[in-house]
Length: 268
Image (cartoon, rainbow, N blue to C red; front, top):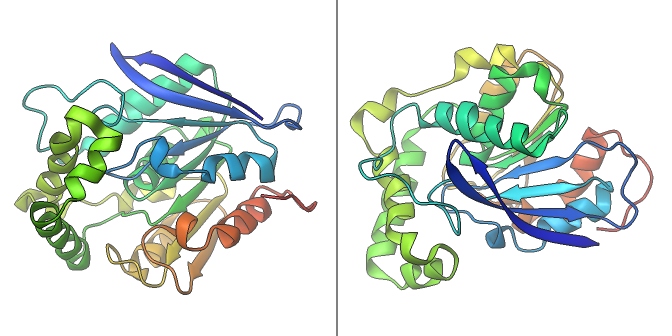
């Protein structure tokens, strides 16, 4: 397996990236492009991208959004994020990265905010995506989401969580956290949703969520599946919280293989 760390410049912003090439990579296999959660980085995926690359035999690219990890910081005044920040992440940064790397119709694998951005991109650039795998996406704001974020803010203030996050976000740690909690707790953000855009998604879509997700209910899954414009598969995982690829990684990989039409046994 070949692992390469590099930077890509998109709209004048340096984004930290990692490319994983399995030893027996499938000829002409589209790249799986992974989009992290609100507090995520490349390292915070742990070994899951490598497991996914090995199992699928697809190349995998992971990147850190602006303001995260080793990527360039947010601009002054960008926190809290704009209500439509998912549009910017989709149309400017994700589209720019796909173009910069020359990725032909990648498979998007997103978690939480990353899954929402993946859905946005598939809706706004439907001809540019082979398939989407969505974990714990939000397409509208729920009370449970705001309550979970409020509780997270208390934990951040009262524990050593910041110290742990600093290992991943360095000097940007407070800004990363504020970009999450301050954005989602804006009064105007309560009305945000992207349900009307889901009909534009035409590629095959796998929608995954844990049955004990503290940041969203099953209604997120049902809403996505009821409104998407293409083939969709629903997967609600038992004994699973907000991060299915940690809580039940084997189930996520097995479902991903099936979704991508990969039938032969593969060791993850």
